[in-house]
Length: 290
Image 1: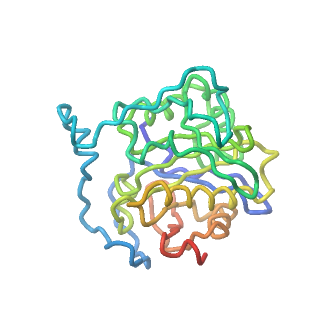
Image 2: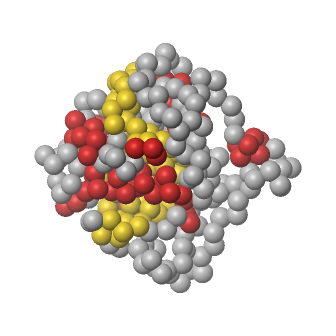
């Protein structure tokens, strides 16, 4: 399975409360005509011809030590519990194995945030620690229909490792709420993803994929609550990012509704290789209005 196979798959958690947001995107997506977008925000110009950012160019030059392409991953002392949401606890996670860290501002250092549902922490995946849990979630029938990663653990392992050992443009994470891992996230550079072929991407557009993994956490409105908190966290930690992007399957009404409740707006319908998607956008300029 390719490095970002899930990018054209939706993570669905059906719920009467429309709280289970999904995410999808397939870096193996074939080139296709982008659906016209009504999104003409004022934060930055639409990008019709993408250019590689300096940090990605630095990755391609192994001798670049000063170009900003190298980031040492944070090191833990091994004494902190694997999951923690304490605002005063040093970040112990070392899941980001690419030599450059990631292209999203080192998610491992973002830290926890307080939400109406409790303290939430986005924790980069460590495959050896998290594989059994994520694989179990991927085999949930409610999730399988959209993510298509059901099967033995090796299926999920391939999907996770391709991101963890990749170039840092997509980072798989656990969502830890009040100390309990209960959701799976992928934060990715939408402007560097094949998704950018299907909409007028802008530099540093950041995409979100989400599935609520634990059944007891579904149907409580957590999807929209956490999506809003996470989108705001992205905008806070990535000053160059003017928009947070999502593309749930149009058939996944609970997911689309959760994004709308989280302050995203519906921008356009786009045809991706594996689905027809709703392009959802949360803009920095509108974050205090929606």
